[in-house]
Image (cartoon, rainbow, N blue to C red; front, side):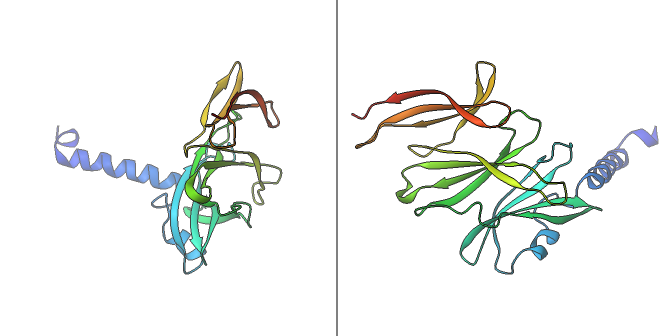
Amino acid sequence: MVCCSGRPWRLAVVALFALLLGAALPAGSHANSDVYSALPGDTRILQYGLADFEGDAVKELAVLYTTAGQARLTFFRGESGRWSRWWDDEGVIDGQDGETVRSLEAADTNGDGRDEVLLYYLTKGNAAMKARILMMGDGDGNNPVFDVILEDMTAPPGYPLLGTEGQAVSVTFMKMASGEDDGYRRVYCWDGEAFEVCKEVVWEKP
């Protein structure tokens, strides 16, 4: 049958998928002209990621970028087929003591059905990697608030392990003993409201 064989049929399927995807998210679904026009002129985008921060099965866009020599984080949400600026960090991602934010990740770290933002920082001298987890807290959908719910580090530089400890959702950090400092394997469990240390093994310094 002419309608269901050959290249025209394949092109029709591709066009249909493109139409469906375009209706779900703004064009490109990444850092496009909507995003650049909303950010400062000297913006240099480091990383972006799609995630469901509200838990409503609709993706938002997190953009990590630098401007005026500082790292900043801005969230966008899709409105009428375009990206609209939704939240700015206002300093909540600033590092301490020479730390520099290097990357971001989105994951449901506490099992509540919403994604959180994990920001990764290299400490001074690149001795360790610090992770800071931001969760959407109190506030309505138009005026969100993102709170820091967990912060710890892994040394040598690495990433925390997301998993479970017993029946609880957990995040695990490991820091090797060195110099005058002991090391540890530290597990944080989500108790329904916050992450609390639920297990820790200390590795004594050599």
